[in-house]
Image (tube, rainbow, N blue to C red):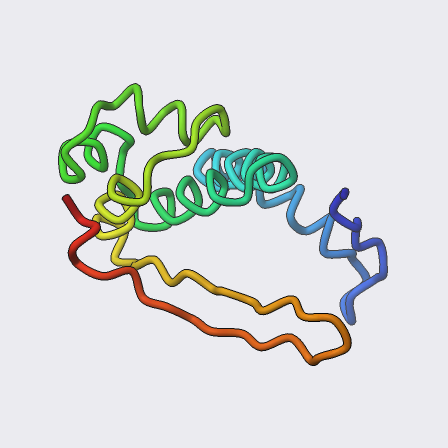
Length: 130
C-alpha cells in the first residue's frame, strides 16, 4: 500500500506535499523523521508488531540499546525484532512493551458457523512476565 500523495491545493495555493518538501529542505530533523516514518510504513506491510515497536520507541526518543537494557535483553535482539525478522516470546514482548509504557491484550474471537462472532479481550497476567 502506498501513501496517497496530496496534490490538492491548500487555501493558500500549495499542496501538502509541496509544503512538506519545502520543510524537509530546511530541516534535517524533519527529513530524518520523514525517512523513519516511511520505513515504519513499509515495515508495517510485512510485520505490524515490529512496526509498532519501532514507531513507539521512536516516539519516546529511546534507542534500541536503551529498550534492550530496560527490558533485560540484547540490543541485537531488539534490532532483529524491529527489522521484522524475529518474533519475541510473550514474556519478552511484555517486558519490551513495559519499557514503551504499553501492555499486551490478547483478543480471542469465537468463529462459530452462522453465529455472530464473539470477541473477548484478555489482559496477559503477571505470571507470564518471567
